[in-house]
Length: 495
Image (cartoon, rainbow, N blue to C red; front, side, top):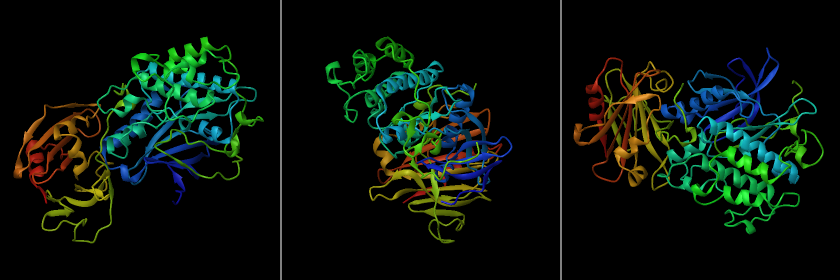
């Protein structure tokens, strides 16, 4: 991967990490003499409007909360190719995952650390936000003044896991080992008690003699605490990891209070970065010598670090629980004029079993439906059509459409059910309607929005000859009505 020289006003020094949904770079602000972490949405996800919405939702939410226990957002922007990015505080002390890999954390420090994480998640819960992916990789450290404890920060509000689950990349909306049982059920209500479960599992990882157990213990005696951990903590962890949500603490603040009552060591300071002993070092040695991935998205491959750097209301409530779009794509190379071509052929465009008639002045580009795969393991086909196909997703002034075909989606839901998963949080939906141009029975829901694109139309139908679902997301030209949408849908042909 070639590093960009600059992103906005920031000089890029090196890659921090690569995830399923984003790339994170270490940037340097020459004016302020400060480092930042810059998270850029991955190119193959950037064409779907809902994915872009959720990416920016997380940045807006963190900016609105602006709390010392959460990763801070300094700014958002857009690359020349239209991909959004978020400028975040750089967690220069590494992650908890790094420190656990480096060695055992002393029990009193581990207990204090668990309390700090609970306090950070309690900030989210007070604002009605559910994280959904509380793992060691999402617990970061930022250095403080000499003599002060490090800042323990909560990163990644579960956005990547919500995207992955909705897109078919994984059936699990969370990290195995830390995910609440109800997160495996697509129809279950996921609330603050799911985060309590994740915190309890994190406590088992930090405080017990058998942290690698795949399942939580069912009763208190099964939790074998490390030496130095008060015995009463076992009952707190057992309740936090109860199988049924109703049996757990209701939220992170209540869990934190229970931990405090169970032990008087919850106020003990953590060892400063660079101190001797496992608590004071990261996987790369000195805590300042290894950068953390701030607000990571998805499983991240941490990049080797060079020598230490010498220079020093939008409506989003249960953010992690929001179901987001699966209609995302990656452009693929194609021969001009052939299947998958970027040029119209006789006013139509064909990719795989999909053929679409192009409105006057529109062209198309072939793609795959990211995260959706057929029985042969190949990505499901998709395309983007627009007067400017490669600018459509990034520029709200450009009309266009995404059309994709998926067999796996048809096995789990109906067209109406599929569209119900794809609501736009800040838009008002019109009543669903059906239309049957060219023999396909489409379910159509139009969303009217106060910002960005004035209208987004979601539509889905079943293939008449085999089990497959065809999906079209349309942003019509300004001033057009339902006739434009019906005409475009009537131009969709399936083999």
